[in-house]
Image (tube, rainbow, N blue to C red; front, side, top):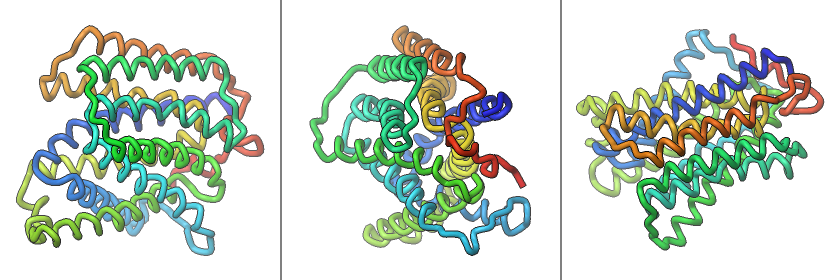
Length: 318
């Protein structure tokens, strides 16, 4: 791994987490106007349509013919399908503090998955950095108080989300024959089909089919929210995440996950006028410190993604 690839991967990891962090305020804005399934359905449908138009117009290049697509469909099953279903329903069945604690464990599970499935043991500094980041996220989440729902269904689904995300990261590293654009394209297609179908089914059952169809065209607040989530939190963020994983690997990429929590808190303070406590300040400082510890001594001559090749084909833009 060269220094330029290391820098590119770290910037992509930071960028995707920042975009997901900003997405929190738009998610709150959209769910105030419609159901979660309606949000997910329109989000992935619009994201796929926009990306397909870019491919059709020649701005993006994908070459999927004659390739074995099974690994891509498996990846898409992990993320976005299982991850978003587990996270969405899990959060709805538990308290905000409980779900925050569960999601905060993603970096640790990713390190374990990388160790046992990819035989890529994290360095001591990476492990320390992830644990410090975990402490920061927990400090930020628990600053608002800990409540308990005792929902076994919610806990199981949150664990499904965590495991799915870890397996997604591992699977991306294994995809040597696909570009990051191709991976993102299939992820968005899968999300559009699955979540679009679920949202349509929900609308049919509730008798609000026309309201669902007309929603983004008559509700400007919902439209602006899903446009951000589709363009930035889906197309761009997924692409950046896939580039980061293919260039710096699971271990380093996982150290940036706490950034989304930090950005989410600050965006809530600035745009939603939420309170910002001393404990949240401490949590933010720990997140930044954890990312720094995990990355500042990374060797540029090692390849965290794959010992045989650095998957440079995944990094190319058309």
